[in-house]
Image (cartoon, rainbow, N blue to C red; front, side, top):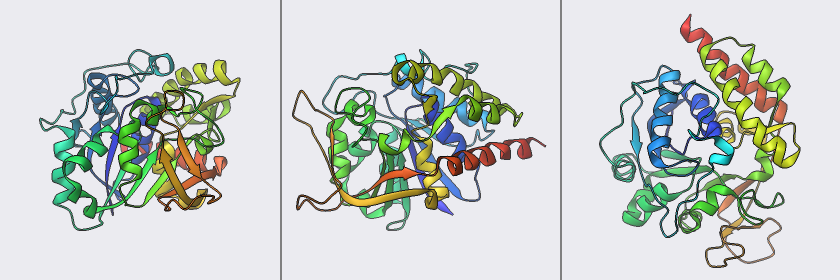
Length: 316
């Protein structure tokens, strides 16, 4: 049983990542889900996380609201991609899953300090503000982190919200800098790999054919999500960025990575948020990241469909 904390800013792709993790109670002990401002403001990301727990019938999952602003910059959001709610494509309702009273950063610190050494996996799929704030406030939490499997950054794909930067890193580059320099093992799912798992119409149709409420919700969200990337890139479907983190934890053999240094630009107005990936080891900067650059897309979607089919079984 792997103990995880999922830190997210739902977002359709965060929502799918949550549903992927929630489908495996025998594999993951989800200590908590922490929400951060990113794709949409915090008031929506925490609500969206709770809606997803309701959809999965996991209302007992603990959800915490965290930082509403980046560490040093004004918040930028992505409603143009995700819609006004962040998870456009499904019916929005007031969730039964409660919002915990504690601040997400306080929860992260408390949960990690209470855990054995090197025992908890952090899975951030949004800006890294909550994680970095916890590290900055209580550096001792790092002794209890096994690894960090995050979605963020780009190398060969360039940026998706600036010419140089991927959205999660751009929103809070100072937080990303703290996390990438924290000294714990990091596996990073950047745009180089996430752009390989496109939710084509055929793949969405296969999800819808599962005919359960969770699969219907995923198909609805992906159908909405598709329209932005199809218009922007001329692609066949939107990339499922965030679920790559959970898929990696479930089936790491689907992915190929390279150990290298990743450094984050925090000063340049032109390239702030850029992830400088030393893929070919041309510097002497220390290795700090397993940079994932390839995925078996067919295997990824087979895993996703198998996982979503589990919700049919749970309803039977």
